Image 1 (cartoon, helix red, strand yellow):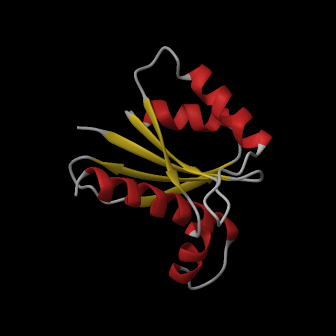
Image 2: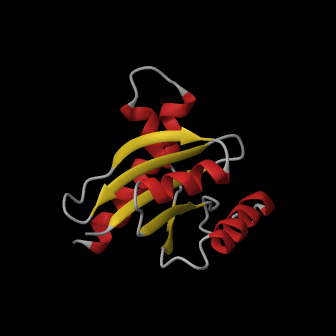
Length: 128
């Protein structure tokens, strides 16, 4: 079984969602603030594959955010010895989609819902 972790990276918070290859349904998990928290979750949830929302401009060009690139660099280095695959998927409009799912606007909930949308889009592509 493959355990997936969806990530909606943000400068303030990191939204997370979980899924596995058995149920193929992403669910919001939690919001965290640091890479060390992320690494702990990767270990405890026995994550085999990570899906990260890739920031892009509306026209489709990649948004070159230095802080995001640094996050990816550090995460890749920390996971170098593990066999955890990292994939990227377009995250445009996921926050807007997350807003439509919320009854009350809570930023932390929005981030984990965005991560869920990112992960579910990936799962739909892989298991179509």
